Length: 78
Image (cartoon, rainbow, N blue to C red; front, side, top):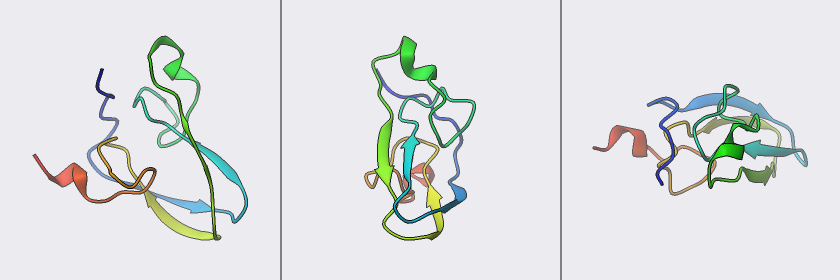
């Protein structure tokens, strides 16, 4: 099963060092790019990520990235 493409562009977020975030891997969450529990009817689980530093980051919403949870430009590839 492939994840749903939530959007075809990354989203800018502010992360706090040491804080844990649950990145949506299924694409079904209404709180993209973060998990809201919508995966419960799928085989997907959220990816829990602990921020290594405070700052602005670009998180993937197409779910095709090879650098989860960060955007690697995969949304612009066919």
